[in-house]
Length: 418
Image 1 (cartoon, helix red, strand yellow):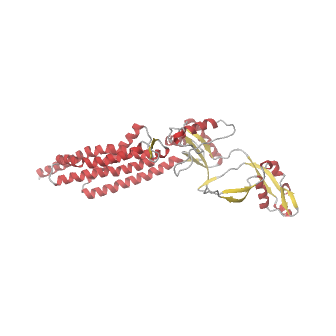
Image 2 (cartoon, one colour; image 1 turned 180 degrees about the horizontal axis):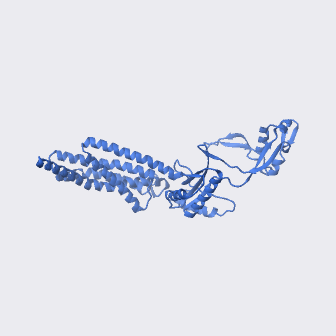
Image 3 (cartoon, helix red, strand yellow; image 1 turned 45 degrees about the horizontal axis):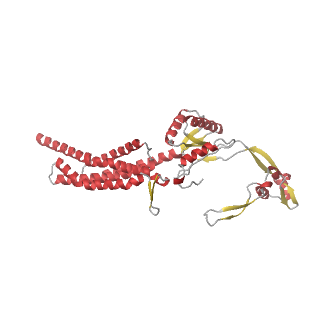
């Protein structure tokens, strides 16, 4: 379904909930409604893969579906097991068909005229990039099961009834067989309701999986939670690598491990500010955009602290006492630090408020779907930077003074002892 403009309709979650309510009670029909995926990960937020013998896989799926229903908050629960049904298998007596000069390929084409049709060619409309198959088949009024039995095959001796060399036998529906890494796999998927975090439901299911007895069947977690864990692992490695490189550069420049650690402590406090801000606003932490925002925030915080520490060291080399040097450093560097922080925060305000500015239409709107993707990123940087600026101007100079006084006391004690 293609929605109208977001300003003229209710929220997509509301529309999907209404559709589920209307279409959920149709006898004999199972309706699953999925929102369009905005990223590379496809399918529903919660996905499980079950491997093992057929009987154990089926029993495990039944147990998992029952548990999903019990914990609630999940929608459109579906699995890849074949639904009960009957297919008809066409068995060709090749020897009898050869007597009449009818090949299996010819028989298959005639049968397809009754079912899916025979592809003649394809056509690409002028307003589309995809081709459309053009198929030829019998009219709908001549595509019944009895018409298949009464088909006549053109042969060298004339039109011969298909029943002369073809037997139609009912068989159990086989469906599709999914194999991953050489193993037969069934998949169990579910969506989540409004306001429900997939990670919370996944943890509940993982606790159930750890305690349940599925026989020889094995259950593994996939879907959105697995993708988030992979993204989190990558971002943590990138963040640690950035911190280590930053520490090495600062130690070489300042020739002091303690001053480098002072800079890194501001990063830790700013991350705490981001988490506190999310708790106050009641928003969940977005792994990808929130993680990228924290890494970007670390770069800005480090820059402000380097400016202060460099000015402080310059004052100390000129002969200023630690306290006087810290006060003069804050006075001299207050403007550049505030300009950096304030301009960054103000520049992120439109993204934080999900603001969309239509310059040709002279219109400002809030809450457009295209802007929600960037809210986590902007909130992480703006909230953390606001708190980190206070730390930069208050805690960093005070820490530098304490470290210098401690070093001077140590020197005096060593001189007295000498």
